[in-house]
Image (cartoon, rainbow, N blue to C red; front, top):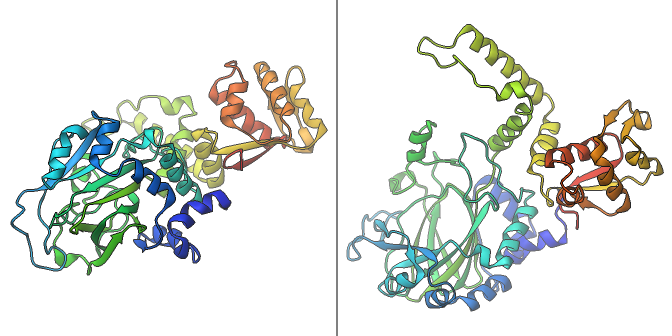
Length: 433
């Protein structure tokens, strides 16, 4: 998908020089960090002006829950190797309100607020623009057996990290299981980042691996420094922006002035998520696929009937995998079913008015040998689509126009059938583009 001017701006505003050589996308795809120092970023600066201190945040929402981090022993730095010098064990306080956290901040602890996204539509738009520029979905993609993202609505969260002045030690060396874009808006903070030679694109840490019965993973916290490549020192200052892909070990060291940074943290799908999610949607359309696999897990092993059922199910999966384009475009993207995923336009052909025939049936349209039978309740929706020609419209608009006479699945099926019959043109992306 080619990004238009509005989506290109999302990355260009944060990484203007690097974007000239497409470096943000390249580094993200390859799991490499990228930093660019430049002018203050207008959008994030406006947020910082509203909430420059924890006190300002407490005035806005005194009971909002925040995370508080501190150190077990401020007077003792652990390790002398380059990767762990001046790094101490991190202590995480139980979640508390921002009002109660302000005194902890002034005693030298870091406050992280994760719950401001719903109050900052401009931040939601920034995150959505980054996703669209990368050609990634605006809704979470998750299948059973895989980890769900933070929210069923947004595949990213916003962090506001307040670090007080005079904190002489950095956070413990660790990696995150999400991708981040960090924008520094106040003060200075020193980061040290590096890749582990045996850790590539991690989806889980050692604890989750054990719980989910996944292959073992390296520890997320406190790995041996000799296994980490030389850490690069990054001086984050006002106007700096940093891409931090998941799996990059990093630690921070505060300078002698208070700092504030904003982070967009993305729970993004992998190719594994995409294939499994699309395959599950395709297979569960078959009622038999939704039945219980009796005797498949007996103490003596699966029964003959269960083996037969598994062979049948595996064959259905193989059939689905034979058409990967349909699996992606219809079974996955189509079932995300939101206004920003797919847009439709009535083809400029007068014979498309066959859509509102009674009963609404299209037979062998355009010589394509397609026999499409539309439910009688679809006549109103078809009329609405024709009345809107040639404007693009989205799934949400079509669903609203169906006036609850059709289920969401029926509306989507109708749109798909009309595309296959050559009556509608479809593209992926927002109707407004």
